[in-house]
Length: 93
Image (tube, rainbow, N blue to C red; front, top):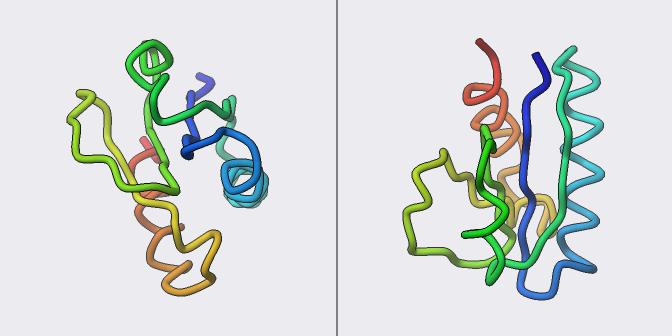
């Protein structure tokens, strides 16, 4: 079954593209079939339906009822292994 990952940042362009590409590579390397969609944090309420995971590169305090991982490590490079493991823990059945 294909998982759905929503990657969100403030503008849905630069940082979410970097994070989305790294997440796609991580999932492929771990044999996880997933659709990775980019959006703005302001559009998460509309994009969360059917999502298995939300990864944000900005601060989000709202609970969308979907597991959420802060993906700023994909931008900063700090703590990336921990962030990748959090993503894998959510998506592995």
